[in-house]
Image (tube, rainbow, N blue to C red; front, side, top):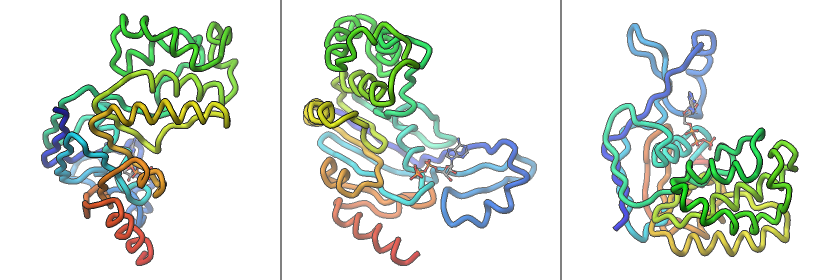
Length: 249
Ligand SMILES: Nc1ncnc2c1ncn2[C@@H]1O[C@H](COP(=O)(O)OP(=O)(O)OP(=O)(O)O)[C@@H](O)[C@H]1O
């Protein structure tokens, strides 16, 4: 059984070189909570006292304003960030799908990137070897896969990173804004592959500003604001609450 459990999670980013902009930033209506303890560096409290349980069958959408803490929560769930306080447990194989920041290295060839990104995604070297041919075919990049990624167009990089990230079959999919899918023809076959991955996963957590993407992929949602969960419920309820929040702002 797959499960994610967060107990009283808070996460603070230390702010380096903040003295100059600190006062101005205090006035901002967006973002997390900026604070400074006596004698310590300023910090941004991006997540504040988060309690959340996500179970098998849950497809959870994260909704909220810029700087609400969605990406930070995604990075925490993906193991990229550690909480400052609180405890987190994740049971189930997890893949974090972000097009940007997947770790595609422009100096390396397509094939080298398949190996390296495969490792980031939690595949074993043996699994990567077994999947390389299929990933390569799916990209349709042919001999370009022997060349450094810096020789690719933007769409070619998207094809490569999409093919790699969707080669895994995780129990838990963590996603920021969905994943890009290249030109129209590639987008069609990418959609099918992505849907297969969604169907076979047990838990999805998706942060997005797109109401239609959330409605398409999620069966529940939480509304975040200033690093806190302010409401949880059905996708419809949360979209309504978010619209109301925006209308009041
Ligand atoms: N590396 C960092 N260093 C310092 N503060 C950061 C860093 N990354 C994010 N923050 C702060 O943490 C807070 C939450 O940011 P986060 O990126 O999680 O928000 P978000 O909800 O994903 O926003 P968006 O919708 O704009 O992507 C913001 O106040 C932001 O300024």
